Length: 336
Image (cartoon, rainbow, N blue to C red; front, side, top):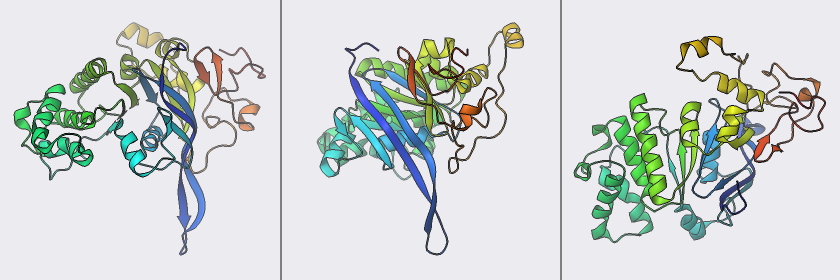
């Protein structure tokens, strides 16, 4: 990134621990470390992809940023305001500019409200549009996401999955946000519909100047929509760089394994390319490994990996990684 690009969101040392309580007196006996010391920046107008296998903390990161969950520690600085510390009216006004699209379009819409009420609810809560003009504004938003405004009297169960996700998108745009957190918005949709929703997100980004954090586990789709990509594993970001560098020159062993799992449509290339298989199960975030989180599954782990947690550093300009194998000055410097 060049120095003249504006940072719209800065996440520093973000942690979200869920307490484990046991016994009659509900004693605190441990924590589920869902998000553990996450750092990244988001630049205005870009799409930052956040990828990793299920259970790595992607969704919890997004929900902690928007304050659905309160952070255990760290800072979430949105346009010079730390969203983890502000309260009341200041939080409500700041939150208007940060919205979220949820993963499940079936569960994120109130089945007892029709589309008009669902999309106009943010306008009513914040009183940004006079009551008599709200129906017109709802029609504009539905048009914007490719739905017929004549359908606004219908209920969510009368729509397909793709249409419901468009309703959720219209609701998220009602307050003219600057940052939208997309929490796996296409994972519950058919493949043919996924492309339509992604193309719609890109068109709206260009039209409205939106900034996205795009949470997903589909690496091929993330490559299509994202400008930069952050890879998460067991609550930590292990690699972050621009799209081209990540897909052409991945540094972290976990990233390499993820990329090797992407199917290639050419059968000759698919047959001859090297696959990197990760053995074992994802460790519990309630009891993460000592040292590097990935050491229990990494085929290249050395003794240092079991003793010290790797530092998250800039290995190349704009390319961050947390791995002993690729850090300058380590015992295995120069590994590729």
